[in-house]
Image 1 (cartoon, rainbow, N blue to C red):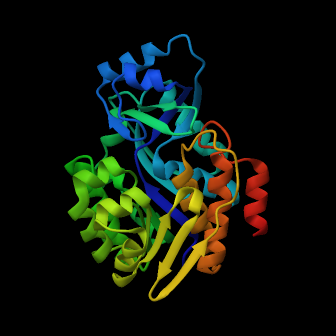
Image 2: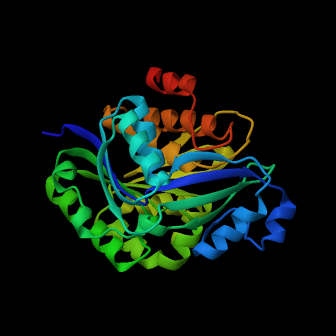
Amino acid sequence: MKILDVVSICNALVDILVTATEQDIKSLNLNKGIMHLVDDARQQDVIAHFKNTKTTHELGGSSMNAIRTLAALGAKTSFAGTIGHDSYGDLIQNRMKDLGIASHIQKVDAHTGLCFILVTPDGERTMNTSLGASCLFDESIVPTADIQAAKVFHFSGYQWANTSQIGAIKKALKTAKEAGTLISFDVADPFVVRNCRQEFISVIEEYADIVFANREEAHLLYESTPEVAANRIAESGAIAAIKLGAEGALIGKGKDRYTIAPVATQVIDTTGAGDMFASGFLYGLCLNKSLEASGKIAATLASDVISRLGANVSAAAIERAKNL
């Protein structure tokens, strides 16, 4: 009996967003458009650079973004992660409670993870992540009962950061597979794919039922086009959801292919676009909607989130998604 919709284990982070210029990117010697793992000293240097600039705080982490949007849509969700004994950790717990997300949060002796996000005028985001407490979970955090009771277990490639995190995800994957819970894998970021390509391909072939990747991630995985990536993923038995930005998305299952048209919008900030796409797609699947309908829901949420600063979809977009 599947009484939950989606459960996830992920880095529990607080996002700090700031509007930046191309010169800021150069001055800080950052590679634009990717996620940088940084130590606390480097993080403080970046934060100090913007000490006189207004910032926005939001609940963050790839899978957490998807989970909280699913919760806003009315899905029954569950989340496991680790936080510190600090105000940022309190923010995460309080927000989860407000959203009705079943919590499997543990507190550890480290600061809560922070992701400082620079958003340039073209809407691109450059992330600086100090993981802190967020990467200190192990197999003990796996919510076995929730995974067994869920329709979908969702996780991201960001969890391939250390052996204890990988161990926790592998335990969760085994639990999900044995329970008949669908396994949803968002490969997450080009930075991660470059370091973990073969491991990710193995996870896709052995466990995944749904795989999310954008154009660059698909290319890094299979060294070819989005179409070839969709074919390879579909051949493994999984649903391929390849995000193509302004060109929409390509969905593949078996020999079936669906082109999802983009929803026109003005790009302000691409933070969370992929996470919101995943949330919309999984929402559709949990309601037994078709792949094409689920793709349209996903595109609706992704287009909305990039029209504003921060990984938040509007109430209007939530209603549009429900109506779809």
